[in-house]
Length: 79
Image (tube, rainbow, N blue to C red):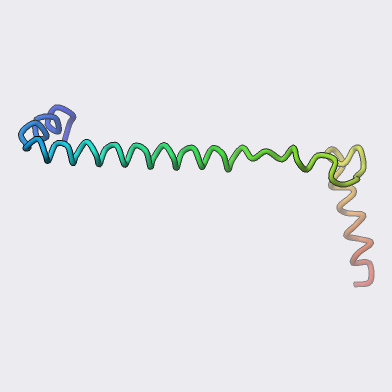
């Protein structure tokens, strides 16, 4: 179906049925926009509250693999 066909089909319905279609479109639009907004919010969480909540090496973001390897060796050195 194309847009012209849909418009023609809707225009042939009684006004009450047309209103039901408009209400449904409004509900679906609101639900879709709400779901899209939730997805965006979950992707861009604000982690700024965690800044400074713990101590770590100043270069941890660059050398995390080295620190992780050292910690794993220390933790599992008895295996």
